[in-house]
Amino acid sequence: MTTFWIFIVLFILVSLLLIWLPFFRQRQDKHIDTDVRQSANIALYKEKITFLEQELAEQQINAEEFKTLKHELEITLLQDTKQGDEEDNKTQTSNHKSPLWPAIMSIVLLSVGGYFYHKLGAYQILNDIPQLAQSHTNMSPEQIMRQQLAMMEQQVKSNPKDSETWFSLGHAYMSLGRYPDAISAFDKAINIDGETAELLGPKATAMYYQAGQVITPQIQTLIDKALELDPTEPSTLLLVGMNAFFESQYQKAIDAWQKILDSERNDIDRNAVTNAISEATKRLAPPVDSTKLGVNITLTVTPELAKHVSAKDTIYLFARTSGDKIVPIAATKITAEALPIEVRLDQSNTLGTGTDFSQVKTVDVIALLTKSGKLKAEKGDLQGRLSNVKIGSDITLTLNELIK
Image (cartoon, rainbow, N blue to C red; front, side, top):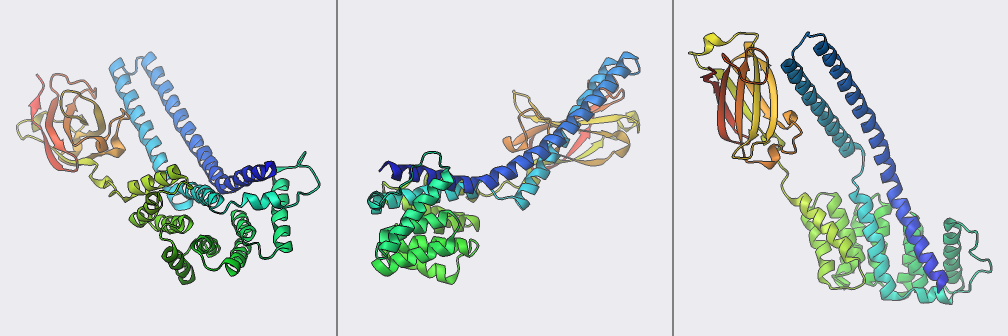
């Protein structure tokens, strides 16, 4: 019995390692690239700050100008970091598999293994198999696993009618990626016990992986037969849900997995299935239209104040939260020579304050035309503002106030 449990633990550990190792390798490569890029951005930022500090010490710029330029560098650093993150996300989407793939594979391994352990009690077979002479001492997990696999193969060789061991061999082969051997083993069990849902589901799963994770007409026939015999057969429903998920048919995946939970079986990993349903539900929600996460602004100046505008004047454009609690959201800088001008404040202009356009419904938009280039309004500067502007809207903001 001890040998059986050692085999089960090692079998699961090796299988999970085979499933997750490629995913962690790709994440490690991605993180290295990200770290290099971020380090370069930070080094460049520090170099520019040092240069500004030198100019401040030599009185080539004043304290206010230093503060303004430093803030602009901070915004640039945030934008570069955000752009890098977006490129990483695009690369990850196009070149790498989602962590949901190994997660769902793990769910299949644990749920199906648990179900058939309780259903068929295959440990009794292993308990009756004559033990090999050598001890497990100083053996690697791979060697122990090979030994246990050899024991099962020897068992079916000496007793070809042992359907339960054929069934266990099928799952062992499938976890090792030996799909033709797995299919053959399941067929041996079917020839002995007939077409039962408990055998057709795993065979369909092995065929699914052999076909490159595509449900062929032959596989669909097996799925239909299994569910006709037992509408709550877990391995079949896991397969249906997993394939639907990877085809972005999230409602179909939810429906299949929910049937497993509704069956009230005690031999499945209910938490794992629940988590899979939760993830599919998130994917089912309509995606946020990123093009609407911002405000389109047409910036003008009143005819009466146009005489106070010089082409060299600087204009700061801000968006901040509406209401009593004011939190800056986004900002950009333009020159007055471009007036009138169309400007967009969106996620690319966010200031890293922890609040962005996706978290609010309205914003206050403020424009400050400054003669000195400083962020603080002074006499002779112009400003304009609009309150409670809806996210995604197009507005006209007019510089209509002269600071006196």
